[in-house]
Image 1 (cartoon, rainbow, N blue to C red):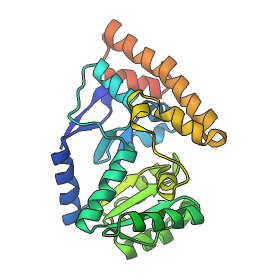
Image 2: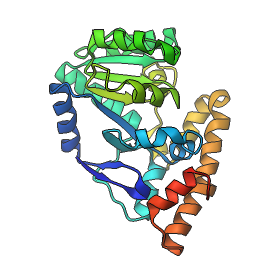
Image 3: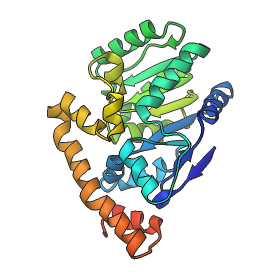
Image 4: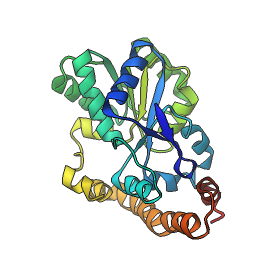
Length: 264
């Protein structure tokens, strides 16, 4: 698997054939691989959670999670063979699980939402082995119990559907302990699987407006946090990056490091 490093960010570059080979190999060899992704908004969050960044940047497969981030990569000279977001990857791998008979465990959401997501996935993908999940409302002190539950189930695919930074903290702390082949921190995907929210329509995604579609579905929960991320990305991160790279001719990795340290 090839990786690019725009601004020092690890971004995986692959064809769909290479992606499937990566996943099949990980599951056949029972080797825990973490799949995550960067979006412009999430990059801005690491100013607040900078201690997580160096761990996240070492995850095994890093996706380009969002059309605006893809446009930004192109603007600074990085081209990807395929672009697949975290929600798209989740749907893709669940479909593959249905084809191959792989097992899936969903960690996250309330007890009701988790059970609904599990039940819906069992109905929609009858050939996949959808295991009994766990809700995401636990303290990190309870990790051992959660890890024991997951390891007892031995899922091929573990969806860690919790909010930031809890999902990152859980995976960073426990990924080497987990008996799961593909581990995916995937936030609100549990709500999509439960039918509580919908994926963005393709035309909205192509326009780079998926964030606003999400906000429209859950304005009370997402409006302030997501609009703050959009503002920070559009009016701070992007201008700083472009100015330093194209005008001042500075190294992109240095620019990101200083940005995350709040020096820019």
